[in-house]
Every structure is written in structure tokens, then in C-alpha cells.
Image (cartoon, rainbow, N blue to C red; front, side):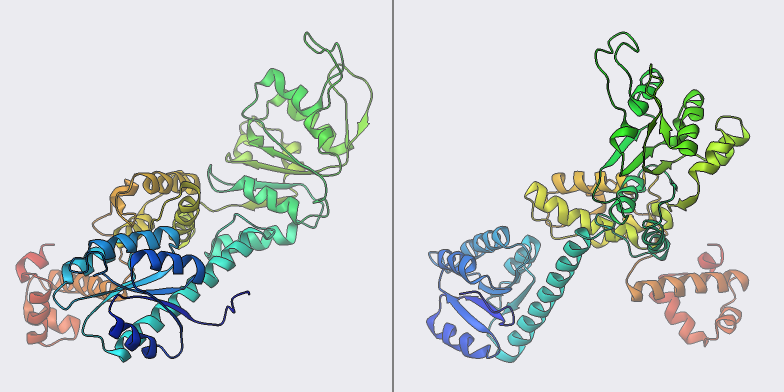
Length: 458
């Protein structure tokens, strides 16, 4: 029988029979399953699939110690990494409770049991599980949609996505401009998926990756005997894209000699294979991408001006990762989820110092650099969270924290230093500038461990 997704399920792992009964009645809003030891707990986990587990660390065969409970915790999280585990410990066993948190437990509760308080903790854990589950489902839906693979929340990148959605149905040549690693190929695929040509092929060729003497035959094909080794007639990439989309990546690296031939194709929509004379009509939508400044190349005579205007009927500028406010952390978390699945790891996310480091890193290699850093960290980390050290990123001394209290305190400290500098260390004058009383300013100086003279010279 299929499980009702609205039923709130809770697994209680507890060997004390009296406490089992108390806990069963404690959670009236939950469907409760009881397990008396680690082996039964894992069996129930597989069958019952509870979002939340309360786990007594003192389990048989060694109830006097936490070893069996901690072992069971690790097994639970290995089988169901998203499950929220609340460890229940003795009132003098804080050390093992903290160790459980390090291993990935959601929270801990110390005996004696207060039903109302424990119920509140369990309910909060359940709501968090559901929220995270909805987020995972939303992410999966987005990945299966037309813009799948593009993860963004910044206004800068959302505007790019809106442009893609508007431009895709129009059968116009589109130029994607952006630094290496910004996702040009993903956006080209999205343009194809959203176009009227999505039932046909998307054919891609990297103009920078193929030697100049081979690129012409790769693009236009060749006739038998056109050159040494041309043993049979062969279609080029343009012909293979007939009816679909042709993606010319790194178009800025296209040799000048081929630019004229590509221009003729864009104007006439016919090609001639190398060594051939027959004009072959081809119906394709052309999407190009480059990290180079084509207008600058036109000025230097390195790129044909008429070809540039043909390619840029619609131009979409893709921002760098550093310009996409908030996206770096969003992407990093998505990469952790992905590499957890691919590498069979159980990383529980990003440590606070990793978040600050990611937000403040310039990311010269853009999304590709971030992806590589997170993948390496997922493989190498020895903890349950990825730290700044795992990412091999330094946290700047002046990095702005995410926590609002820390932000306020940082701003307050800077304001006091500025006021004292303007007042040349005079407390009364600095207090006046800040709109504070002298005692309040002295209190703040003590809070931030500042001396009036040192602050004025800071």
C-alpha cells in the first residue's frame, strides 16, 4: 500500500520499554514506529522511511556507552542522508551529543524527557525536512525544464534567462558573449530546446579546438577525392544541422579565410562542400558564442564587420559569476548535492566560513572554477561540512558576514573608528558625532576592544 505523503512519520529508537510508551503517546500528531536497537532501527528506516528519527545513544548491546548509538547514527545518515536525526542523551553526556552533531545529527536533547519540548524539536525538524524536500523537487523540476542546468537567483542572470525565453522562438541568429566558464553552451542548448526546431538536432562545433586546415571540411564537408585521404563524400556539421540548430562556439577564433565562406552561407543559406561545385541548400538556426570582444576585433581588422552584423542579430551578454549577486553560494550548494549523488558522499552542506569565502572570492574562472573547487572539496573533506580550507579559498579579513547581527556589529565598529578618527581621539567629540553619550561610547569601545587612540589611528 502506498504511503500517504501527508502522514507525519517518526521513528523512535529507544531500548527502555517504559520510555518507549511515554514517547509513543508524546507525539500524537505523528505516526510513530518504535525500534529497540540499531538493527531494528535500520530495518524500520528502510520500510517506514521516516523524515525524523529520535535516537537514544545508549543502545544494546552496550547501553552504558554511546558507541552503538553513534554507529547507528552513521548508518541512518548513510541510508537516508536527508533524514533529521535528534539524538537523545543522558544529562551528563554533552560530549557525545556534540560528537553526534559533528557526524551529522540535526539536534540533540538531554534527558529527562519533557514531552512538550521534545515534541516541539521534532515538529521543527519535520517542517525543515519538508521544506528541503520541496526545494529538492523544485530543483529537479527546473533541471528537467527548458532551462535545465541553469541555476540562478540573481537579477542579472534571471534577466538573461528571460531574454533566452523571448529570443528562442524567433528564428534569428543569436550571439552569446561571456567569459569562459559562464555557461554559454548551456544557454545555447536552452535556446534550441525552446525553439520550434527542438525536434531536430543541435549540432555544436568549437572553432578554437580544430586546426585551421581541417575546420573548413568539418563545417562544410567534402567530396570524394577533394584532398589526400578524402576517400568518400562526407557531410559537414552545417549539413548535419539541417532543420535544427548549429552552435558555433568560440566564433571569435574563426580564421579570416573561413569568415567569408560562413558569411556567404548566412546570406544565401547554401553551402558548397570542399572540392565540390554543387550548391546545397541548408535550413538551420545559427547560435554563436565567444569570450572575445568582436567589435574590438573588427576595429583591429581581425574579424569581418559584415559577418559580425550578420551574427549579432540578437546579442546576449552573460555576466561573470562575480557579477551575479548571490548565485555563487546557490551554485555551490547545488554542486554539493550533485557530487554527493555522483560520488556517493554524505556532505551536509557548507560551513559558515565556506559561505563567506565563496561570496567574497572573485571567481576568475567563473562557474567552471566553482564547480571544480566544490568537486575537489567533496572528495577531500574529512568532515561532514565543506570548509573554506577544503575549497582552498582564503577568507578576506574584511569579508562581509551573512549573519545580520554580525553585519550590524561590523558596521557599528567601523562607524566608531571613523568617528574617533575625525575627532582625533576626543571621546566627547566622537560621541557627539555618533549621537551617543560618553558612557555608551565607552561601553562600545570596551565591547569591540578598541582604544580611543588606536581607533583614531586605524
